[in-house]
Each structure stands twice: as structure tokens, then as C-alpha cells.
Image (cartoon, rainbow over all chains, first blue to last red; front, top):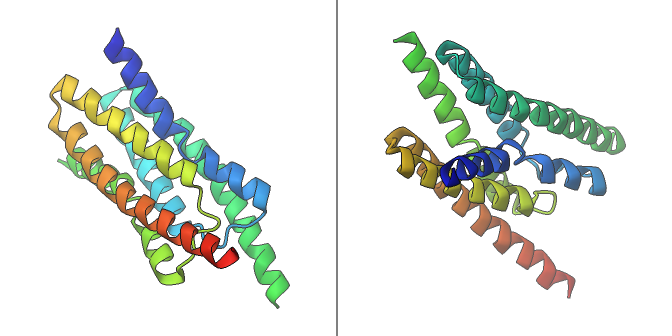
Length: 91
Length: 91
């Protein structure tokens, strides 16, 4: 049982790992130093993890990566919006 | 075999997910918008994943998360150094 809790804790921490980054972008309205490549690379990675989970029919892998993907889509949308705003100001 | 390649691709992308962020901090010498919480949360998560991998005796889980942890330690070290520099300038 302790190991199950450890596994759930591990999954939750990494699954929601980009939530603090989303909140920081939300508060500061700035994303200049955030790496868009990191967000795209993670998003591509978790999509492949989901496909791998579908192959294994492992709902834990599918679910955890689906949640990650949702946070990454929010982070990426926010990132693009903030970066475009800065570019527009710079014109 | 195709599934093995898919799994390796998935693992590689997420394992090295913070490398572009490290390179961006290195180039711009700025980490103001980067969330330190996100880095700490991921580092804590991958440590728990490693413990879970040790419990399962799964060397893939242990190895992948050890690599993630190494990149996160580099990212965190860099982040702290850059943030301290900005603070010192501000004094």
C-alpha cells in the first residue's frame, strides 16, 4: 500500500509539473525566458507515451500522460499568446 | 519492434525535456520567467519515480528517471545562479 501511495505521489508530481510554470506566466504575463522547445518536446513525448500506453492497454500510462498533455496544451497556448504580445509591442 | 522504438522515442523526449530550457538559460543568461517550483516539483517527482522503480526492480524506470534527475539538477543549479545574479544587481 505504501508503494501504491509512492507511485501515485510520483505520478501526480510529474503529471502536474507544468502547473507552477502556467501560474507564473499567468501572474507575470511574461514568458520570454520559458523554452517553447521544452514545452513542444514534452508534448510530443507524452503523445508518444499515450500511444505506447494504448499499445500496452495500460490505463495508468494513458491517463497520466493525457493529464500531462492537457497541462502542456494550456502552457503552450499561454506561452504563444504572451510571446506574440511581446513581438507586437516590439514592432 | 516498432513499439519498442516508439517507447524509446517517448522516453527520450520526456527524459531530455528540460535540455532546451537549459540551453535557453545558457544563451540568454536569464531565468526570470522560468518557474523554479516546476523544476523542484519535477525533481521531487522523478526521485519518487526512481524509488518506485527500485521497488519494482525495473531498470528502465530507474534509468530514465536518473537521466531526468541529472538534467533537472543542471537546470536548477543554473536557475539558482541566474536568479541570484539578478537579485545581486537589484540590490
